[in-house]
Amino acid sequence: MGLLAQCFREQVKKMKDPRMSSEHEFDVSYSTGFLAFDFMNGNIVRIKRATGEEESYSSIGLVDGSITTIIGRSGCGKTTYAVQVASNIIRPFKDADMYIDSVEGGLTIPRLSTLTGWQGQELRDRVIDRNSGVTAENFYQRIKLIHDIKLQKREELTYNTGKLDDMGNPIIKFIPTPYILDSLAMLMPEKYSSEEELAGQMAATATAKANTQILKTIVPMLKATNIMLFLINHINQKVELNPYAASKSQLSYLKQGETMPGGNAAIYLANNIIRFDDTKLKVEEYGVEGYKVAVQLIKSRTAAIGASKTVNLIFCQETGFDADLSLFLMLKDAEVITNSGAFYSIKGSTIKFTRRGFKDKLKESPEFRQEFVSAALNYLQNSLYEATQKYESYNSYQITQEILNAMAA
Image (cartoon, rainbow, N blue to C red; front, top):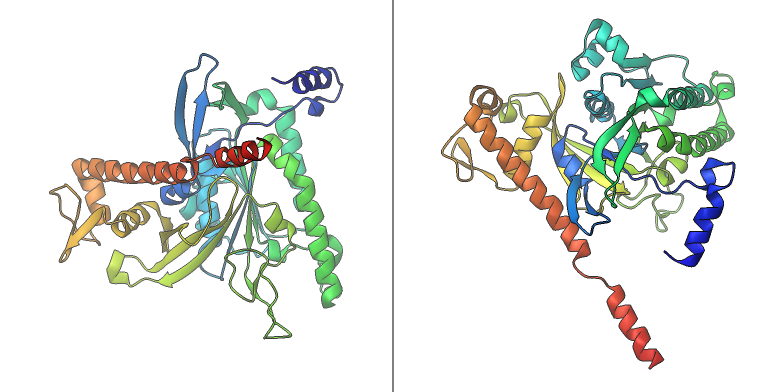
C-alpha cells in the first residue's frame, strides 16, 4: 500500500461520518431464472487470498441494488418478464418480498398468481402491488421507506451470501428487494396527474425533470440496501424535422428515430438496459401460443454489449416466459441439440424426442433431464469463460509501457 493511501485510510476512519471511510462494496448477482440471459450478463470473479491461493467463480444474473430498464413494443412481454424475474430472485429467501407500482394498471391478481406461482395469502405476503394512485412523489417515498426499514432491521434482513470478494472475504448483503415500476413513461408528478393540468410540452418537460431528480436521489438508497429497481419503458418514434440530418440516438443499438421517454436519467443511471423484439410463434412449433422474443443487452455494467449479445426466449401468452423451452432453443441454435427429421437429440445421446414433446420428456425421464442439465451447464459455462478470456487474454498496458520506456531511453 502506498503512503498516501495508508494515511488517507487512517484519517477517514477517525471521522464521524461513516460514509467517509466506506469503500467499494463487492457486487453479488442474482439469477433471473432465465440462464441464457444470466450468463450473457455474467462475468468471472477471480479471488486472490492473502495466502497467495487463487480461485474463481461465475457471477451471473443481475447485480444487487441495480437498475434494470426493459424496453420494447407493447405486448412483447416486458412486464411479464420483470414479474417472473423478481419472483425468481426472492424465491430462495423466506423473508423477501417484491413491490409493484402498476401505473398502467395492467396486472391482475390472477395474472400475478400465474406468473409467480403463489396464491392467496402467500401471494399477498410476497407481492405488494398497487395499481392506482401512483405518482412520482409517492414512488420515491415508498423506495425511501423500504430503504429506511431495511437499515433499521439490518440484523434481521442481512445474510451471508456464501460468496467471497476478490480478496477472499465473505460478502454480507441485505436480502434482495425487487421493485417494479410499470411504466416510467406513465409516471407523473402529483401536480400534473389531473387532466386539466396535462397539456403541452411544458408538462412533459417538467415530468421528465421530476423523474430525473427522483432517480438520481434513490440510486444511493438502492445500492445501500439491495433494492433492485425494474423500470418498464416504451420505445417512441421521434419525428425528425429534417429527414436528411437525423439526430443521434440516445443510446447505441436504438434504431434510427427511436427514443425512450421519461428523461435521460433512466438511460444514464441504469446498470442494464434490455431490449425486447418479438416474433409470432406457430403453435405447432412448440405447442404454445406466443412469441419468440429476442432479448438484447444494449447496456450493461457487468458484461460486454453488442449485436451478438442477444438470446432468444419463448414467451407463452398464457403462462409467461418458459425457462425450459428457452434453454432448448438456446441449445438448438448452438447446435448442441440437433435434429434428424421430426426427432431431436442432444449430441452424444441416444435419447430422441420431438420438439412438442420436449417438456413431457423432461418430466418423465430422469436420464434425459440429467443429460439436458449437463449439456446446458457445459455450454453456458464455456460461453462465459470464452467471453472473459477474449477480453483478458492480453494486457495492452505492456505495449504502452514499452513505448514510454523507448521514449525515455
